[in-house]
Amino acid sequence: MNEVRWDANQIPELRGKVALVTGANSGLGWHIALQLATHGAHVIMACRDNTKAIQAANAIRSSVPDARISQVPLDLSSLASVRACAKRVINDQSRLDLLINNAGVMFLPYERTDDGFDIHMASNHLGHFLLTGLLLERLERTDGARVVTTSSGFARFGRLPTDNLHGNERTSSFHAYSNSKLANLAFSCELARRLEKGGSRVISLAAHPGYAATNLQFGAANKMRSPIKAGVRRLAMRVSNAVLAQHARMGALSALYAATASRAANGEYIGPDGWMEQRGYPTRARIPEKASDGRRAAEFWALSERSADVRY
Image 1 (cartoon, one colour):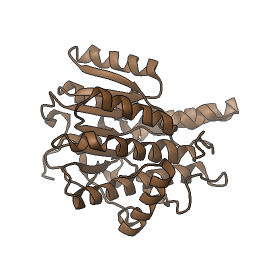
Image 2 (cartoon, rainbow, N blue to C red):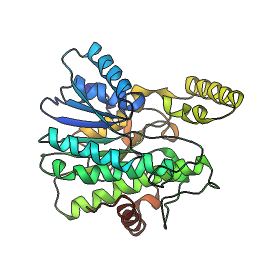
Image 3 (cartoon, one colour):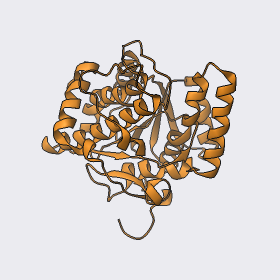
Image 4 (cartoon, rainbow, N blue to C red):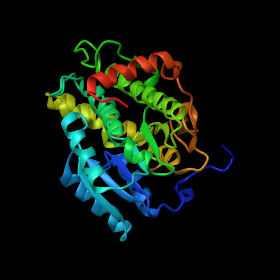
């Protein structure tokens, strides 16, 4: 990248384009949706809570009165919900220019979804894996389409599961989250390889926000049984967000660059340019070897296909 720092003012005109953003009702997803709508895209906000999605859409319209926004229900922890979401998008849209795999959960206590998968791996990776596969045909028929998957610096601490995606109650919430973020990055890299090998016009990129102040950090506190421990956790996160984190609108820039910048290329990983990639403007981030390893990624891809009952 050149020396000019990239920001949202450099997003090109997006009128006529359609973008699906998961988890668009708050945090990074909301800021991504806001900027895409500001620059003319029709933004589909795919969210678990439709009431919050409507409120978030109205907040965008207060800044962008002519914004084209629609909502579609999506609970990424449920494979049935993912399939219903994809079916509705396919029925409603003749094109899909951008798929922003943004939604996620963080540091939750061990829990299995109704489909039997670890809550972190299901919500952060497997749901997005299935959604991308189901929407790939729409992406393929749209010239210049991109898939952007949100990972995290925590990916460097993760390990890719080899046998199943059920998780283990002995695994800490830290490592469960890190594993799912490594899965996001490995998926994005492997998707890029497969798209290029198949001669597809679609490109796949990954992005991470550094340390951005969002509601994601408070999810664990909301699941705690002890009000005292939950209160301490919330206070700690408020202080950390205020002192160490960058604003969510800055954290969103990495994904926005990956989604819209003309220089962004298939297989790239975008993150902040500051110290330890924690804050700053978009630049190319370092991909850990355990995410870029083609053999490991291919094996994990096959496991994901079996788990989600999808092939692409």
